[in-house]
Image (tube, rainbow over all chains, first blue to last red; front, side):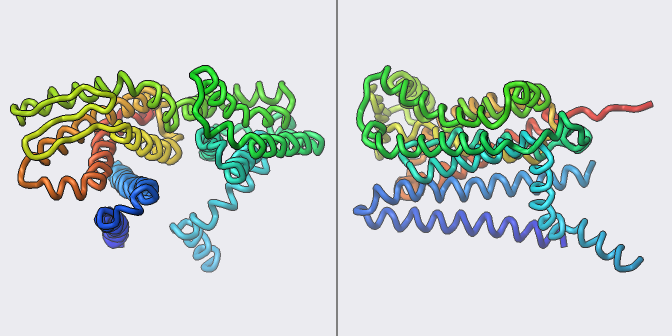
Length: 68
Length: 325
């Protein structure tokens, strides 16, 4: 059960980063929207990185506590 | 017996904990006069910021939110509010104080809307500094919520939380400091990156301008203000706030301050490594990929640096458990 939860958290992190990377790729195709997208990109990137970093920390903390 | 046991297990489960958390937080908010004042301030600052976007009061809102969360995270044994005495729980906030508080915030919103143009235009250094300082005045109406003696005892009882909130207030997302420091910081960054890149791409050139440029055989990289590492700093601050809130009761608070400033420095160093990697890899066959995905790669690197930094300091950051004979 614990493993499933960890895989689930990692999957969410990876999915958010993939979505962000995909958005990054699309942005380069459409230069007209670059200014709006730059702000949006920054927010998306920050959100994805926060989820990834925060998720990893919480998993690490849980494992550290389990080990004592 | 069985039903109470099941209920207990349900409450102990992750979903039960999650559902109980807002209720516990709300009841704790109601139990202490100070938490109500901080919660009201947080809500009012968020409202001001939402209604007058030019005010851009993210740092005060972040600081208030952090103070509130850290107060709520305190261990029940540590929290003075739980042991209900007249001094600690205090009377509810007086109506006239609440009225003045909201009136002051309404006047802030009014002034912000009326002076919308003032925030946007270019300013002289002194005027810009005054305008930046005025954004902190948004916290001033909070003073009216309680008498001076109550604020003094609040500061005494929640000293560590206050220190954390003040540090967050003055250092969260330091855009203005970066803007002011850019003329020399940009040069220092450019020269550091250039020195590192020279080890891997000896034929490179360097143009020292306000936005320094690294000239490579296949790819030139211009270090603009956005490459200054501010995003990495912001990410670190958000993630470190999460660590603070989650581990507040187990944390050595003096070490937490050192770890915070050490982490900020680590992010600046990571940014130097990031630009170096971009330039070095951009001058290989990976040029197209570097151009296309450099923003994503930057976020990944900053996240990775945070994780490595936290793994390195985590045990040191926590309190040493007391040994009882």
